[in-house]
Length: 295
Image (cartoon, rainbow, N blue to C red; front, side, top):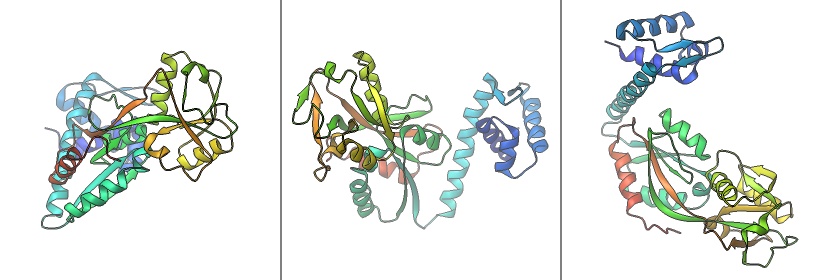
């Protein structure tokens, strides 16, 4: 039967797809990793990796073991953390995407801390793609995301409603217009969030649906940089309506399109391989108790 150490080494190797990279992370020799993988293959009578020239390609048997191994490793890590923190502060690692981090997250965490002062919270704010990776690698316990995660090992439940709006500077033909036809956005220049952003993904999907051709002049992970570029008339921006309510200091106009309501949800997402601790359940219950249109 596989040992916990063997499973940990297998998981890291599968994630890195190279024994050399796994060896560096685990501070063991590459030959030791090769031996452990061979032992697991002998134990279960299957091939776990196809040895390619540049990287390892996991087999179907390997994928099955990886799913089960992650669950075992994560459960063990949660057990160790619970035992170390017994009768002490509980830890909770929360992730959030950029729009959420810039709007409602602070309010939520502040209120949650009042209700659960014994929970020590750390927060990571980044884009949807990175949040997905952190959840899969057990570097986050749970996350609030604005984009849809399609990975079958990530479960998501909508919790807050949101809308995307367009913003423009004074020199834009749309300045002062509250609603435009989506066809008028044809060939317009846009200032967008980076690839991997939930906001960017929704915008691109809708523009493709309506067959609108557009140009991307700038892209940035930083909302402030996008606002500055829009204010200086480098293009049109797209952001959450919650963020739009905070731009009074900018010479920027907010508008929508007639044909499509850019309604979306913020989701509470977690890995199916991550055990639900008491503090995670406390956060889930707290989020579920909030109004859907939380400002």
